[in-house]
Length: 487
Image (cartoon, helix red, strand yellow):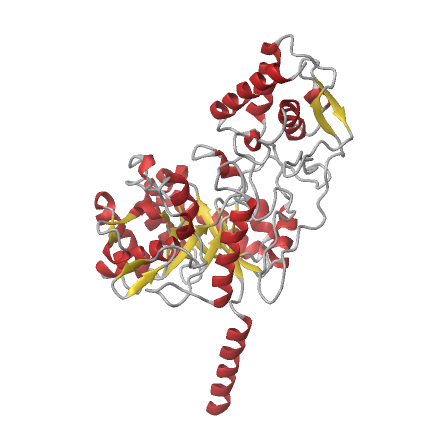
């Protein structure tokens, strides 16, 4: 019996190597004016081999749809809830009951982790969450234990890579940021003592985007970059170097065996000179190849779980860090494929099925429109871009190749679609008209939104809340172009 078991285990091990990793992991963001129905997203995940997903909030529709799907779930708690959970054990218990116990028991949702906050120690937050993250973590952990879920559901804190640094410029010099070092060690010890994981977000794109002197090839995985030599280790990409800087920090502080997962990593496709289809495909294919091979880093040969950011574009996401924030998806907002990816053994991406759209019509600048009143045109474009996503018509973006007339048409159409093609949504001071002729001009797509009504979703459409200042600037630039270019 013992020999049979040994042979069976060896067979399973070899089979696992032959097949590669058991599945993929990704982030499912929900900041969209017209979100894909959750059941369609879950089918999209399964069709493309994703067996782990991270949610940034406990969305009821998503958590119900994930029930009995075979997909493991990490459910997040937004930063603005940390103070409430830190200040009251009762609040933490209520949150766990409503958002964890409820979905596990009623729907069979396979919740494995609760993520406390999201990058709460960013420099830009100015210590806003340093006093509440650890107490919230402790209260949620205690609430999970009280609910009888302490062994099944673990805790983590998703962190930005700016929580560690290296004074030597090499991964081996890694240590935690001095201002939060003591807090980080308390958090790591608590997570380790309770069987949790450390979650880190790594963004080679942001390294490239933030520093004009950053070597571009070092952001990718094809070994073309000038290497960074750190003793016996040679690094040819920032992903490995960044991750191993964290591992050095953990080793230096007595946590060398701490389990680590990568909570976010990806590449956007628009609204920055380096954010385009070619670079996104190149980076994400290289990332997938590593995951499929089961490749770790020089200091951690065992591969971590890697949550790709992100599954789908989000047109309602804050653009405070940059307009590219709405374009991280490997799929478009409607689950259509942006660019091809090889998921291993020749398996290609599969697009979402069963998506229903609004009527095939667009709102555009009327051919008879004049610009005798530039102020009226400016007001119309500003209105459109205040309430809809105009990021793709910014300089260097996918729609920046449009002429001035089509620029205005793009803004009008995005507003029209965001407002569900209401009749009054295409009446910009008599400057616009509805057409059934697709005005798209590749690579610029004039979208038609998902018909939420046909999907029978009770979703209140949100209006994009951030980025009005930059979009207004774009709008004024468009007006100037129109005033000079339309006769």
